[in-house]
Length: 489
Ligand SMILES: Cc1ncc(COP(=O)(O)O)c(C=O)c1O
Image 1 (tube, rainbow, N blue to C red):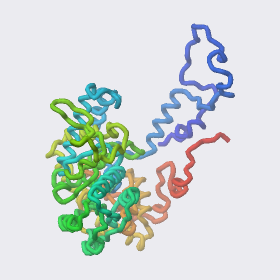
Image 2 (cartoon, protein in one colour):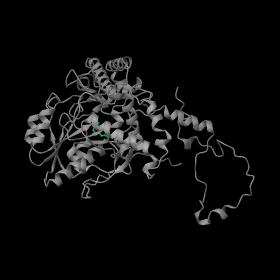
Image 3 (tube, protein in one colour):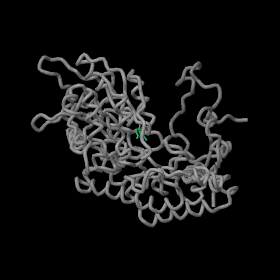
Image 4 (cartoon, rainbow, N blue to C red):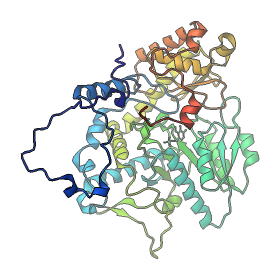
């Protein structure tokens, strides 16, 4: 039963004079305020802060925390976001004082352990990707895209090549064309075929000497591995272009195949997905990038380097004392807390363990796909990688239930909603990513809930969710004109 009293605004719960603590009377002489603070710096009236008893404060925040869903409380199959369970040991390890109580301006000699962890992480990311140059600086996946495209631009500038176009796949995440535009490239879209894979003929028709980079997500946002990848990368290379791999879906291929081996030249990781960093709630994130050897000199600096047994922040000047780096894209060493969680995760699993992570993610997604396809159409095949995209199109025509209706109603059954209306290439898309951390029982319960919803009275589903504090906000107004400030009446 919800405690509606405790989930009012804290200002509404406030009562004048109510206190959490009563301090003992001062046993020292009390100076006049005017002696301590000049008159013109004093507030005219006390600040209108909420006044509550300790128990009210605790109930308020504990109850508020139960109004939302999280990976610690619910199954969270939000496609493309990889909301897997975040092992608590990573939190504990990255909070060790040697990691969390240091200052980035400290002498490197006093933070050798931290630098060693970051250095080793660079090596692990290089090994997993098959691309030797690594920068830990970017602060999110999208920032990694931007940084890698700046690296590509520096490379072409150095070669005296004026390439102005970046190609993106039509199933790409919106950040791909956005990053390209921010670096000053014109973007053109490469179509997919009806099977969800790149239309190679369309790619050929768009390839010429003006193309700098083709940005590709593989496995793509439909949860499909593009088996034409070698042909695609060869074609782009033949035209002098580079292949950027959006690594948001690396959780499907860890230890199985490597972007560097199938022809990618640059890529980013989303450690908050692949390596279980906490996410949702606005960050901080990280988006380390890996590049081929001939691109490494353009990476942001500093990079953590090792000299004998000592670690330092290197600027990588070449022999003539010049430097080709694009410069810093983030202060200090990047978002170290997130990077350390990735480091702990990778070290915990080891090589074989990471492969097992991906195998289980793919197994779980295929199992759920085999259940869901009896309820919703899955337009792009019977098999998937780590996620799949179903369509509510038929059920919308037959029973008036849209993808949004299903997403809203599933909340009443105690599951976070799947991603809906993305990718845009599927009508009424319902994108499900169970991740490797879920049991068969959870996947069965989710499929059973979906099955029941499609049989429910449409009016009940249209008005869902019925169990949440807010049901169907006006999404556009909520994001364009959010009211985040309380004003007394
Ligand atoms: C395929 C893909 N590429 C890029 C991104 C951007 O990553 P970030 O949110 O870390 O900026 C996402 C995020 O969901 C994604 O799914």
